[in-house]
Length: 282
Image (cartoon, rainbow, N blue to C red; front, top):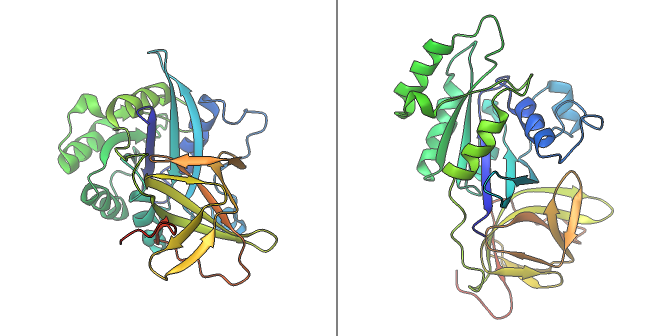
C-alpha cells in the first residue's frame, strides 16, 4: 500500500485536463501512442460531442521510479465544468492528492478555485501545474504569481508543463511519488469502501467505481450499501485500466470496480459499502 498514489486532476474547462492525462498514460506506457485516441479518458458520446469531461473516470497506471520501486498510480479524471461539480466532490473524496492544473494563457478561473477549496477541505496534497507553457500567449510569470497568492506555495513547487508536447510530465510523475501521501487504510480492518461513480451495463449490471478505505473485498463477497440497506454479491471486482481488469481481491488503498448484477438500478453513488457478513456498524 505504501507504493499506491491516488489522485485527481482539478482544472477549469479547457485548461487541458484530458490532454495532460493522455500524456501520463503515454509516459507510463499504459497506452501506446499508436493506440492513443484523443482524450482517452473521455469515452462517453456526450463528452466527445461537447469536448468536456463529465464522468469521474478512473484509470490505473504503473510507474517505475528512479528509486527502483514500482508505484501504482490511480488517476481519477474529473470534470471542470460548473454543471458537474458534484462529480468533482465525489472523486476528491477518493484521493489523497490533486494536480491543480492552470492554463498559462488564461490564469486562474472561478471554477478552479471552487474545486480547489473542495480538495483543501478533504486535506488533499496539492501539486500546482502551469499548463500550456508552449503557447505564445502564455503568461508564465503572471499566472505563477496568481498560483502563489492562491495556495501559498513556493515558486519552485510549481511545475511548468505542456499537455500538448509532454513537457514537464517526468517532473509531474516524480512529484506524485514524493509529495502525495500513500493511503493510510488498514487491510485487516472491516471493509469500508466508497462508491464515487457508477455506470449501468444492460448486459452485465451495475458497475460501481470504488475506493477501498479499509479492509478487503473478494470476488463473491456479500456487501451492504449502507445508505439504502441493500445487500448484494460482488459478482466481479477488479481494477480499471483502459478496460476492466478482473481481480480476486481488492484491499485498503485500492481503486477499482465492483460489478453487481442488478436489473433495477439501486446503486447509489456516494454510498458507503461494508461487508454484510459479519454485520458492520455504520
